Every structure is written in structure tokens, then in C-alpha cells.
Image (cartoon, rainbow, N blue to C red; front, top):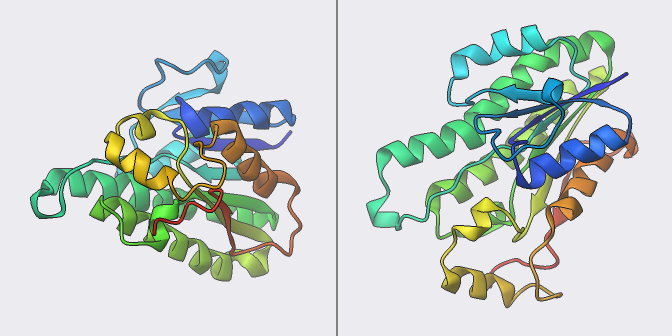
Length: 229
């Protein structure tokens, strides 16, 4: 049985993806620092704070073989550009960028040995535009570049590294946005509604399980045309 490690699985997109992987017959490890809203089976819950970068290699060693890694965990603050606290910027860069890289580095050796593995990074439509949350947009843009870099580095060893770029999605993060921001992005969404977490999760699970092996280093948009204008 293959194992999927999904970060940010306490709720939202990560939790939806974890359930879909379970339904697909995979063993799931759902990682989050807050699992209070998580309804995964007890043996599927992995409490861990991704800001603890130094412990990530030890965590992966304890978890054993990982066939699918989903870097979904992320954080966002709605601070203005000219008053963004250093601590908030550091947290965003750590959780959204440094931790995914550390996890890829930790699982890559075992995947290369098996000449098999899939990694899915969860970016954002924010990666493609100037974004009101400076460090959030910057971290997601960098994560998509990391996706291409690791696809190049690991592709010859049979490891696929892809990404999804969700648009507005019903989640705790979306709930925190000011109404003016929600209204602005909704004007560019064809359906006029946010995505359901399950809709983004379906794309993640496809890339993690059934997508053709020739799909590597790509970013799949799941945003219903919601590029801010």
C-alpha cells in the first residue's frame, strides 16, 4: 500500500485531499500543527509545526516510506506592504517555502532509490500577479519555481514534481480576507463563487496518483479564470 503525506491536513484543502487519498486506497499521514478540526482516523494524524525546520528530516525518517508528498500547508496575513511585521514575513516564508523544500529534500533520497514518487506543491493564483499580501504572493511564486527545479533534478529518477494553483477557495484562509478583497477576486471568477476544497483536492490527488508520467514540472490552474485584473 502506498503512503501519502499531506501537510496542512487539519482542515480545508489538505483535509479534503487526505480523505480522497484514503478513498483511493492509500495510507494517509495528515500533518498539521492544529488537528482540532481534523476528522481523519487517529493513526492518520501527525501533529507537527513546520516552522521547526531542523526536525523535518527526523520526522520523515520516523514516518518511513513516503510515495506521495503533498506540500499544502500555508499561512497568510493581511498586513499592508509598508507595515508588514518581520515575524509574520518570516513565518510565511518558512511555512510556505522553506518547509516544502525541506520536506522534498527529506523524501527525495528514498524516492530516487525506488525510482518512483510523486510530489505535489500547492501554490496559488497569487504567484502570477502582484498580490496585496506581499510575502504570501512571493512565497507562492517561489514555490512554483521550486516545482520546476525539482522536476528537473528528480525527473530522470522517475520522480514527478508538479503543482496546483488554486484560486479563491472556501477555507479558513479565505474567511480571513477583508470583504473588499473577496469582492475584487470574485469579479474575475467565471462561476462567481469560490472553489470547494474538494475541487482543488481532486486535482491534487490526480497529480499524486493517476496523471500520466509525462506530466512533470507543470502547474495546474484550479482557479476558474480568477487572475486578478
